[in-house]
Structure formats: structure tokens, C-alpha cells
Length: 402
Ligand SMILES: Cc1cc2nc3c(=O)[nH]c(=O)nc-3n(C[C@H](O)[C@H](O)[C@H](O)COP(=O)(O)O)c2cc1C
Image 1 (cartoon, rainbow, N blue to C red):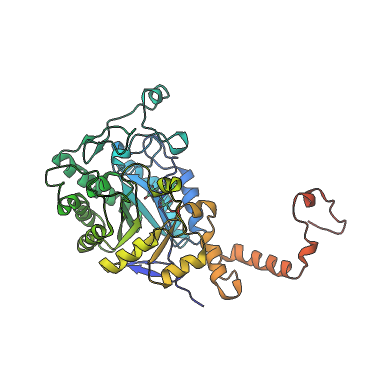
Image 2 (tube, rainbow, N blue to C red; image 1 turned 135 degrees about the vertical axis):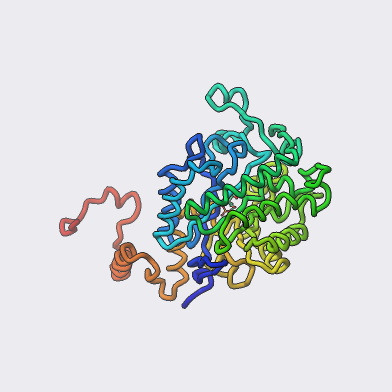
């Protein structure tokens, strides 16, 4: 039985083999010059062997000022291409689609890694070899209390950044990525222009919704000039700000329609982040997010803008993912932390959703052995299995062979 989660999806000329996607996730493992390493190859490669149809890199920063930490991955130089090419090539060799996310952290740049505290870099960090740098944003306002005050970009500087996004897209194409996602969410640079909460400009990039959308739309145009017409582009949006006076779903639907007019193929539907941490953090302290908490946003954008969407956020259970796709709430399912928890999630989903729970969809070099083991386990009585700490110390029976 073919189910929806495992069915392919064609976006432009690119056929995604299934609907299961690894969401972009910063790993803070890049070299200080933004280059990825073999660590990223193994990290992202294991998702490709785990039946994730599409594997996204973490956000690749379009300029070094736009890094959130000294360990962010970059795409601001041609020197970043060779390692990314190796990664994209391996993902492709496993039958998955290599995908890149590009972005700029804007007012959330120049911070400590999350597990070091997430605070803006200070003179204390400078003593440890990580001095702060000048950060830039839509307006000269900190992302939230305690964050650094950014320099407000001049119109010329905004235009330069639009070009930087275009250059980044060209490099991603040269590296062999087949799908592009633009990080326009979570209080990062593009989101800071979109949201009335963070945008206090009074030039052509501020004020009305049309003006606030201008930077994102100019970026979409620049991408379409530098990224092949055969390959799809997604935009990750914070569909709602979750603050009074912030972005509402109607704003996002209008933006999605405009992006679609400029050649954007799907919306990657996230939320929050405009006044500090994104929904993952902030909701955890108020009312914790429940599985699929952002799916209604995806459904609203899909219906409102009549274009494909990707749902993300606490989707962990294969039948739930299957339900979201078959109910028409999203076209793709992105997994973040669940993919970290189980890099073989795509294989397990295929087995769970397959009638008879076979290993038919697993690579034969693994599936064949697991099928044999399954038959063996099915022919024995679980009572005879030696499980748990006591079993570890139990003497082996003399007739057991290795
Ligand atoms: C370690 C980590 C790093 C992340 N880095 C990014 C990123 O680079 N770009 C992005 O758009 N979202 C990033 N996110 C958000 C995830 O892509 C995803 O939207 C979020 O974790 C919700 O999905 P989940 O509940 O399946 O984890 C990150 C999340 C985590 C946990």
C-alpha cells in the first residue's frame, strides 16, 4: 500500500522521493571561516541513509556579519563550495535530495552558542578569542532586552545584502544543491523587516505591509536570477509573531502570494521569534508546544495562497505525519529534533506504515539482516530473551555460539 508520506512530490524539475524532510538545524560545528567539515558530511549524510527524502543544511550565512556564533556555517565565499559539494554529492548518491538553507541572523547575530548561554558576545568572550562584531538589522533596536543594539542598514546596504543572497544562491547551485530555503523567520534579518514590531523604518522598506515585504521580495527576485529555473525555492516564514501588533496569518498569506508571483514554490511554515527566542523556547515556559502545533499555520497558508507548504514543529509520530499529508494540511513534513533523536526515522516510518511492517523499503544491506532477525525473534518466546541489567551478568549457555 502506498501512503502519502512515502509518495514523491515534484517541485519544478526536482522530484522529492518522499515527503520526509530534515529541517535546517544549526550545529555550531563549522570552522571560524564558515567552512563545513567532514563532521557535517557524516551528520547530514546519515539522514540521507535514513530515508529522509530531502536533507537541509543548517542556515548558511550569506555574510560573516550575519552569523549567530563563531561556529556558524557560511556561504559568503566561493571557498565554502568544495566541502558543501562533497556533502550534497553524498546525499544525492543515497537517493535523497540535497537542500540548502541560506540566511542572515540580523539582530540575533554575534552570540554565544545556545549551550554556552546564548548571550550577546561581550568583552569576556573577547578574552577567550571571540570578540563581538557590529551587527546589523532593519532598525537600530535590540531583538529583545539584553541583546546588542544593531546598526540600522542604509538603503544601499540593503541592496548589497540582496546581492549577497543572490550570490549565495549561485554558490548553492554550484555546490549541487537541488532545493533552496530562505530563512525569513525567527527574528532573523528578513523577519525583522517583515514584522511591524521590529520594523520602525520610514523609507521604502518600512511602514506599510507592501514596504515591509520589499526586502523579502527583492531577495526572491535575486534568487530567481541566480538559481536555475528548474530548481525550487522555499521561504521559511514565521507565519505569526504571537504578539499583539505583530504579523498575523493574513499578512503571511499575502506575502506568500507575492513570493509565488516571483517564483517561490513553497512556504516553510514556522512561527515566533520576533521578541527574543522562537516558539520552541518561549512557548516552553508558557504553554508548552504540543505535537504539530504549527500545522494549522501550514494549512492556512496552503489554502489561502494556494501553494505547497511544509509543516514543522514537534512532529514525531509517523502516523501523525501521514495524517497531516493525507488531510491536506501540508505537502512536506520537516523534522528537527526528532531527526536528531532518530536519524533513521524515515526508515522506521516506512516500515511502520507498510502493510505487514516489512523491511522492504530499507536498503537491502540492512533490511535483509533485520528481516532475518525479525523472523528469528518471532519464532522465539520473549520470556526466553535475556533483557535488562541482570541479563548482562547472566552466564552464556555452553551451546550458544557467536
Ligand atoms: C539545534 C537546532 C538548530 C536549529 N537551527 C535552525 C536553522 O539553522 N534554521 C532554521 O530555520 N531553523 C532552525 N531550527 C528550528 C528547526 O528547524 C525546527 O523548525 C524546530 O526545531 C521545530 O521542529 P522540531 O520540533 O521537529 O524540532 C533549529 C532547531 C534546533 C533544535
